[in-house]
Image (tube, rainbow, N blue to C red; front, side):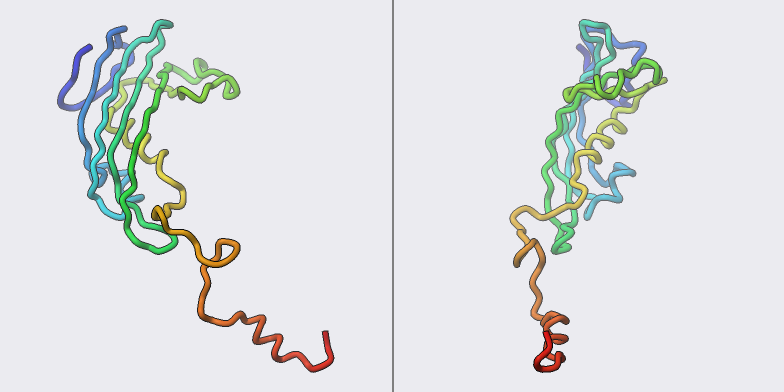
Length: 170
């Protein structure tokens, strides 16, 4: 197993059973597609990617990503720190014909068509984007009131209408 510094590309056609390890730290704000999802470009993403041939001679990429990003809570609009902890396993295939039927794919690995070198930075970015909550909520912030609605000090407009009803009508 060897560790590769510098520009990090996985060449599926060059993988060996021992494999290659890519390690590094990325700043979330430097990841172009991720930046739009963030409240701040600050944060830190540590990654370790191991690319190798498995016992069946499949091109397997294992990713471990740990760190944090800053998101905006959609309830309070406050910025909060969101922890990232990802363990992902990809199988690289040469064409769509090599993809297994969807119902045969397992929960432990995803299949990706890779017709050439794969950029490690792009793999890390995609994994982080897919791990983010669709609607970010600051931990510990629970909605107030019944039914998950925020209570307000304003009276209900239906209460005002009820006051306009004529006496004796239902």
